[in-house]
Length: 240
Ligand SMILES: [Zn+2]
Image (cartoon, rainbow, N blue to C red):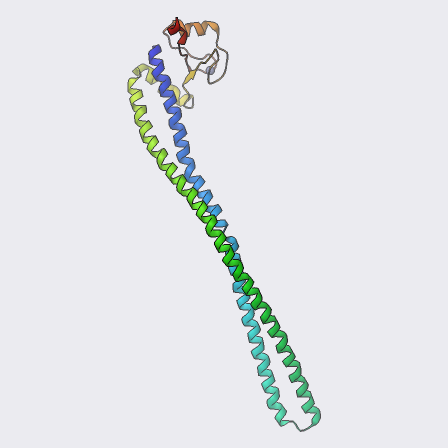
């Protein structure tokens, strides 16, 4: 029985290992998704600047249309000027034209401002794109590494599942049945490794009588507190 427990404990360790590998396999795709989201969010700066540039272009067109409207107005005044008969009327149109021409200069100044702003935005976009490329490269490298890690663990899972099969074949069928039953009830923790005189799972102190039975008797011993199969390496025996 004691020899059988050795293999059973090895099976417990194998199941623990498989559980860890499965957790990693489940976790990696989530980490990759988080990295992708983070990477994409970094390009927001570029998107915002591009929208600003587009808005700037629209504003400029609006100002250019304003100038066309003013120029049409001036042309009409000039037509009407030809038909005036009094000096007062002539002066009136002349003043209107001067006023509108001053308006044109004001609008043109605004257009120049918009053009300068557009140059600034374009410079910003170029810088942000260069910066983003560097950031994205770093993120993509991390993602590649994680994918490689995922592959590694998937292979490991196949290997260790095979190794578990081999271990199970070595366990006494009755013991294996008990293990499988407890595996469900005890959330995958069946064998408790006793290092000194404490249960390795629930940490309760094991009675001296039970401890000595573990060494001397070939019976299967169960932790009185958590109900798991107790396993102790009998090193002293060998030394004796
Ligand atoms: Zn226990």
